Image: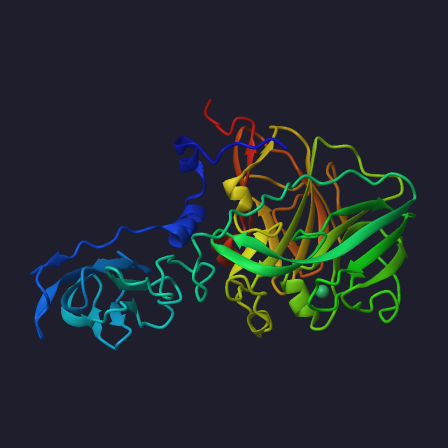
Length: 453
Ligand SMILES: [Cu+2]
């Protein structure tokens, strides 16, 4: 799998403005404030130690992190550079309001442990308007970090010392040879970096999220040996949507130390989900126990130049190094911290996928959920071939019908094909754009990535 380094400066400019606006909201770092001290001597009661200058924009603070030399009283110069009203509300209740384009001033007393601040206009804090005043020598506040944007991890502090994530190779595996396949699925409960700075105690099949892609053809027999090692903390099971078996037979849970055979025949072609179904199945899926089965028609698929397997899913962060948060995942209106392709937020933005211009590219696509639909789209392309849940759009059809985005509800799968028309960058997104800034963004680089040479 060839890869290119993330975007040269020139090429970066060519990426969709909208996408980068979202990214800027998520990752836009802001410098620390300069604080002008009025005195370097010890503070006297009532003495004003200096001025804190903070600007508001729509929707964020600049800077979002302010360092002061010591605890005590500071004047605050608050400049609203945005187009709507904002306020600067400190955790002790001090509130300074400024209309669009206006300046306002006030005074705040910063305690030794520092203090967080937000804009209290409804929705603005969640939209990225939060920040922290830290006092030199004190540990940074665990909340109100400066990530900004409607990004993941709002209620979980990022850990800068979390290991780098493991890149998932997006290449689809080849068809398994033979007619009967014995496959070991071994449960592994392990720490995984699910996005830069966030580690969760995930539950996996064979150590990865998603689990391994299993690729067979209609008529094959698949014998899955599910193993739950003694080191596991909970029971697990597996449910293959590509199988037709009784729920209370093959899909029953096994305890740590147990093993079970799940035998099925591939009767129908398609892209299928498998997942752990142990109660609460929502938590077992949300915590990483899902994967893709590709069943090809008995006669196989036409050969293409490149094939990828992409699984969209969601992370609902629990505390660092703990399992994901079931209550968040179970919300009536779920708000995932991250939505991502193949388990890790933004991994194919950091490590773009190389394709050749004019090559026929096939993607096996699955929405593992557990809750959110996918509207899978690749900017700058048209899908000329789509097989979604058994329904076909075929290239070369009468009328030249095409497809711009493939809608998948949780558990649904599709096979899509496209070709790029010229060298350049082709972002991969779910066109539910509120999730693009939460990790559902990748990049295909076609040719040398530069359409202008
Ligand atoms: Cu499980």
